[in-house]
Structure formats: C-alpha cells, structure tokens
Length: 336
Image (cartoon, rainbow, N blue to C red; front, top):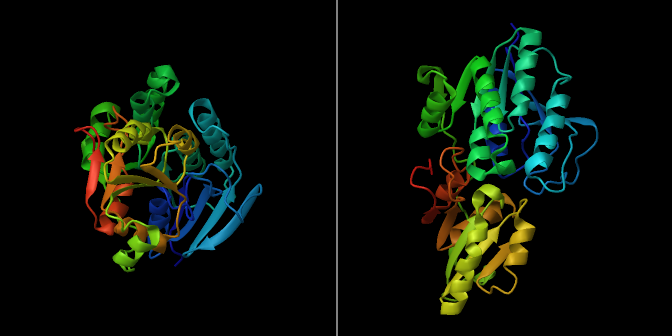
C-alpha cells in the first residue's frame, strides 16, 4: 500500500539558517518517517535577500533529508520592506499555483509569508485535499506593530489573514500566547488550534569556550553581549546605537557584537560608524556559530518597542542551546 503524500509549501527552507526555515525543513524531514514528502519553496535568500551561491534558475529540484524539494524563482527586492516585500511574496504565490508535483493527500503551508497560504488553499480545492496552516508569525500583527506602510493596509491585511485561517482545515500555533491571540482576534475557535512549540534545531556547543574566547579576542575582561540572527525591522536594533555611545562615553568594559545579516544591517553599520563598543560579524557555520554563542557572557534578544503578539522569537531556541544568560529587551506582553 503506498504511503500518504504530503506537500509542504513555504517561502523559506533549508539551507537557510535564520528564521523559520530550519523549522519548516525539520518538520518536512520528520514527516518522512510516515509519509512521502515534497516541498515547494523559493531559492535560499534569507536574511541576505540575495540568492545563495549554487542556487538559481526558473525552477530546480533536489533531495534533502529524504524530502524532494522543488525551488522556484521569485522576485527579490533591493529594499525588502513595504511594497517591495509584498511584491516578492506575491510572485512566489503565483509560482506556487503551478507546483509541478504529484497530487498529495494533504497540504501543509507555513505563514509567513501570508499570501502563499492562499495558493495552498487554491491547490487544496483543485485537488480536493485538506490544507493545514502552521503559523510561525501573525502577518497582520506585524503590519500593525511595525507600522508598515503607515498603517494604511492594517485592516485589509487583517481581514485577509482572518479569511485564510478560517478556510484552513487545521491551524497550528507555536505558542500558547499566539493561539490565544488567533482565537481572540481572528475568530478561530480555540479548540480548533493545536499548539506545537518550536524546538532547538541546533546542537549544543562542542568546543573549548576559553579557547574560542581567546581566538575571538574576548578574553580581555570586557563583558561581551552577542545578538545573533536577522537584523531587520522587528529587531529594533537601531536602539543599540545610543547604548553604544553611552558605553563609549562611560568607558565601560562592555562590547556589543551583532552576528548575521538582514535588511537593516547596512543602515546599522553606518549608524554605528565610530562607535567602538559595537562590532559586526558575518554569519558563521553552525559548529563555529554555537561555539561563538557559548563564548559570550550574555546573549541579547531585542524586539522593537510595540512588538507584542506577532511572533515568538525563533532565536531563543538557539540561545537556550548555547547555555548562556539571555538579556531580553521586549514588551512584557510579548511571547518572548
């Protein structure tokens, strides 16, 4: 008897290391224990917002961890905010309507991005199969809490997201707080929402912490605080610039290290020019990355003021695996 077939549809997937991609990839790989799994996704591009080396083209396919992964080309804006990001997601949404896969028995789609959920629902109707939505971020909450496009589309995006979640055959939230928000603000019965928390998808550090600190030059007595991951609008890292100026003025023995990339990195580096206490590092291979996090004195979670209900910071599962203290700059109501 053939095994049931699952189609996973999402904008982000391995080998991306930041954000929701590791969880989508881990979910798909885990499902292969009981199902035949195919994935439709984009070429890896996040958080750099450029196609990763070795990828590209109108369409390509590869096998990863027992999963057949189909990648489609979509528009990547130079400035991945506002209308540019909406256009980027819209092109992937259109490409996903012709996935080029065998009819599955069920479709699982991941939000964000939001618009591809509509593609999954369209395919579900076309094939007569159920569609489940895994909610990693609440898209319309991002519009409201980040003040995107001056709030002009807040109501429309909320109604669109609400309609999509209502049409889904199943909804998964990654946190109890998020499930409560979906029930309260999107009118999805709380009993219909399953909570499946994200997991730590990285291994614990394996290297010598003292040696890594020495290698990085962090053994000089200064208290080293590391922020790792995407540098985008929702992190609000521009608030670290005045903190860096204060550290410099007080000649405090503190350094702030920002590891990774993202749409705001260039602006942050320009703003931090001349601030001695703030340093930037590029993304690192997983093994070196975890040893680097473990070498820190503390790890920083920083959310833009007003961020309360749109997401659960994915970096926390990585931070916890590094076994270092975490300093959270966040709203008290945040799931963080």
